Length: 287
Length: 150
Image 1 (spheres, each protein chain N blue to C red):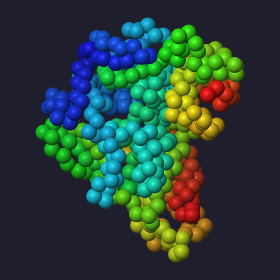
Image 2 (image 1 turned 45 degrees about the vertical axis):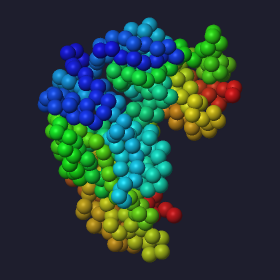
Image 3 (image 1 turned 90 degrees about the horizontal axis):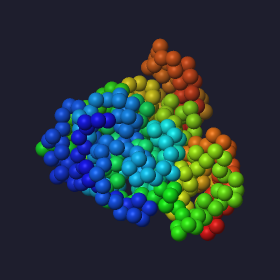
């Protein structure tokens, strides 16, 4: 970690100035819960670190224009403790609670979890089913918005340029009928990278027992967290029954087997996905 | 680079290597060796300190990131030679064996009790879920946290 310049902007204007000095080898650090490890193991080359942790303007959770807006510096402790998230976005609330440990959650930020672009990133499946858009600022101070799907381009890779930074995440406030849930499985109960994760969202009411507008996203089954559109069509507009859940889990299992064919984890994941999909669906339709 | 911060109630304004970790700042620069390094990856919790009232893994915090902030380490638990109630409870309940996880466990527990004076067993287990202990089997530690005198 020698010869690395560290910039410590404490405001957005200072951040813009720091981004102007960034090079393709520069890195952004907020909570540091992924980056510090990579740097210590010398697994990445870095000439400059821009420390985002002091920028209070991107540390917020609020409702604005019918959207839940979360500043990139919000930690997962803040996210999981926030009433807005707990009430309107249980999938994100549940995901936030599975990240690392309390010590990690007190530091890890949603901007970092997205920017790290891990296929196992815990917030990503939930953000996908919530229809998240990502606000990105560049070194000229311009802000653009990108759907999360377009930002995640590969394992550990995002579409961010070296002089761009995630400043916020926003998604439409899920209505009362838009249920959403998240399940993760790892080798341990806590402090564990997801071996598999699933988020499911959909409009559901108990009277007609039909799921509509279904969104399904999985983590740790591809280079990025991704939506499974074919699986969504299997459930959409159907009456939920034990038979439908069984056939859905079986079809999803086959999809996973294809998606990670040849991977040594495939035999495990094709079985385990049936359990987490069943659990997620049952959570979703529970009263 | 010079940074100003507080540790255990004492103000500091010192020059740090910009990519120094907080754990190294505490142990090597300030001589506060109560905070231990176990894994260096934020998985074992041995390096836990309290940063602005929240438990964090000091092996994952960059020194410049503590500018303007307050840190409490295990050395800061005692006041005027008197142990903190959490420390007394750990001793009373046999929650210390080799002692290596103990500073981290104490700080994770202290952070919990600063926020919640009457934690449930679930709250306690969650609070120490980021702290590994290879000796005690955790039960004595959980009992010690429950048994803290208010």
